[in-house]
Image (tube, rainbow, N blue to C red; front, side):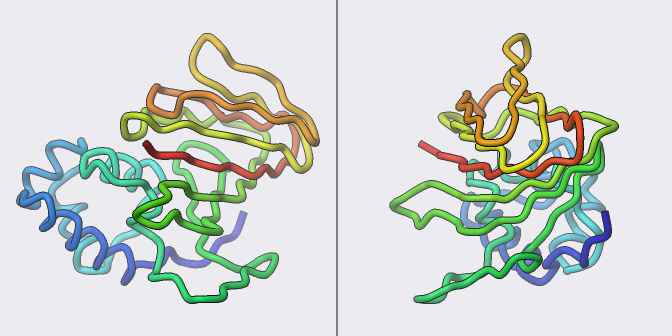
Amino acid sequence: MQQPAPPLATIAAALRRERERVGVSIAELARRAGVAKSTLSQLETGSGNPSVETLWALAVALEVPFSRLIEEPPAQVRVVRAGEGQRLQSDQADFVAKLLAAGSPHVRRDIYVMELEPGKSRAAAAHIPGSVEHVVVGAGRILTGPAGEIVELGPGDYVTFPGDVPHHYEALEDSWAVLVMEHR
């Protein structure tokens, strides 16, 4: 899958803002997230190419929804046309997530469209405590869910499961799905 470069300026500003909000150094945040200090430093200066996994680890360490690191401030009316939007590629599998809408500070919910290709699976680390994932498959077939409770879904199928435990995504064929993340 070909993708445009991630929104580096937005990510850089968000990482600095959230790190300063919790009052930790770059070294401490890197340690908490399990990423190299040099990687975090590059991201805060707007360089580098962060994977979904790196940004999730940073969001968990900062105790914020993933979307807070990639979403630009919302406009009053916002349209995301098919094929547009911020796309982030996994470094584990042919998995792309595109954030459609981030929850406001009062409504902690994010909406994504995921594109998955067969091949490698994506092992997702636990997200912030209280996270819940809701998935509706639009096309194709995927395996998803927490370890030990993975289910197969086809077009129109829905599943919900805790997102604050390790979980799994795997395409059995070219697939796309809508993911709604709730953060309590």
